[in-house]
Amino acid sequence: MGDWTLLEYVAKCLQVLFPVIEADDAYASQMLGYLEALNGGVTTVVDHCHLTREPQLFDAMLDATRKSGIRSFLCYARWEKWPNGTGRKEWQMNQLRRLVKEGTGSDRVTLGLAIDGLGEVFYRELQDELFPFAKESGIDVFSTHTVSKLSGIGPDTISQLAERGMLTQPILFVHCNEMSEEERDKLIAAECGISSTPEIELHMPLGNPVALTADEAGARVGLGVDCSSVVSGEMFSVMRSALQYQRGVENDKLHSQGKLPKYLKRKAGDVFRMATMGGARAIHREHLIGSVEVGKKADLVLINTLTPAMLGAERDPVQAIVMHASVSDVEMVLVDGEVVVDKTRPVSEGAFTRVKWTEEVKRVRESSERMKARISDWNTAEEAGYTRIRDIIGLTDEVCVEKY
Image 1 (cartoon, rainbow, N blue to C red):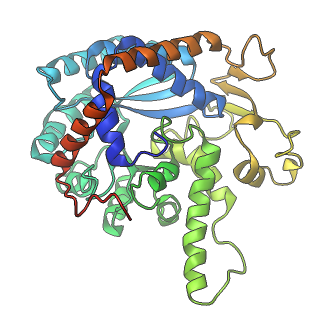
Image 2: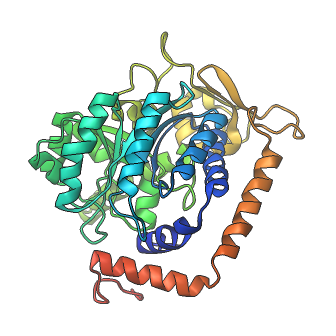
């Protein structure tokens, strides 16, 4: 997936891989994603959970989420349509009601809603059904994607929700690459959040990252990964991507005018704050997480400052973490005061305190082989998925080019 565009991801993943995933595969992939995050020093995630094709899939992912030890806002996608699916809306709402009634089984796992969709029917169902259900159930974390007109993924979600008076929820908008100043100001006024994912936005491409400009304007901006199957699953790479992209844009503008900056406008501390407190503010949890303060959750990451990259970090810890640290420098991770990653343990025991890494490796490899076996002709399935997505979005050969 490291060379996939957005269209390839949607075609190959959503159209080819998703339909053959079973509960064991869902568990394995969910656990692997969370262990990668924890290993890289990520203590909290907002998980936009697309894989709700069958009830047992979400149950398996919820089980993996609980066992991993991470803090997760697990946002359930109530798809209004799924290829070849029937009666999905009814059982999905029943599953949501059951989850609200029974709880997630862990204080660290909070149920949220993923609300991607298109068209008048989608917005009407949001207004008439999902938002009232959420209010009644106490659900207050919502995740939705808004990318670009070319991608066809929520290009006007902000305006559509605003026009219908639905920006009254603390919605987390992911990407926002083509967000206008007017839309940005509406998000700020409504105290909605933005999850900017610069590494994958530059990669696919989704558009240029808005992290630092939106933050400067006063928005609640946190940094995200989006897809750890495509790019890195930790914040070090993301922080550097956000910072260096914006520096490059602004430095290039000066160069075009024959000028040089005396000082860099964008600082390491800007993206460090967005990777910590910014994420907490984006989902209105700054009173609980995002910083080390009395009364907050003890979500802590210990960085080894005796590695070659981090030696001397005490002079400016923030700059050292943003510009030099990597996953290998993370020594210990605590979530809610519990040590969930401890790299000082013997290699035979593994760094993860809640699961045995060797068992998870076996589980993932077996899942991979099973899924390969379920797709008899990958090339044919891939081309069919690609064609469906192009038709849905309405892309032509003039827009979707091979050579450039």
